[in-house]
Image (cartoon, rainbow, N blue to C red; front, side):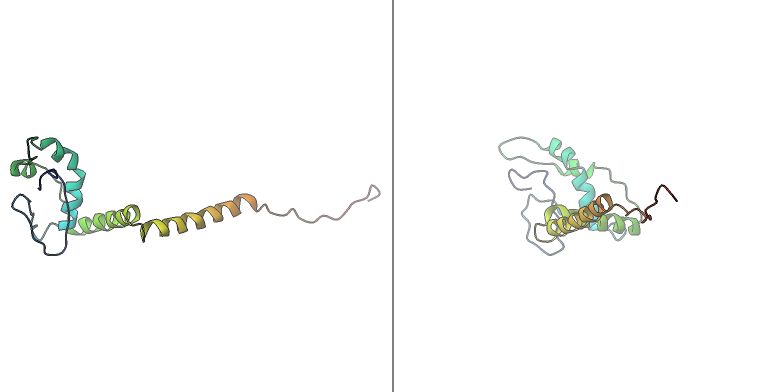
Length: 132
């Protein structure tokens, strides 16, 4: 972790250069790296609590290794990742997620507005006279 960023979690699916104070986690075949990323993000507050506050904030390797993460089978991990990826795109992408969500909510609004305000027309009745 770089100074001031101890406890931060990031994900990259590309090769990159790391500094000597960054933990890189390589995952075995039965663990999706993206699933591990989301699981660690879920524990980020715990990691922040383990940061030693000094002139340069540090997080020990042992603090990271002590984190317990339940690991479902790979297909379940992939299902969870797909859901969280969609949610992440929706929440964080100004060009993709937000406009699409606004469009969908507008359509939903128009649909329900139509249901609420389009009353069925009463059946046509012939005029009855008092002599009928």
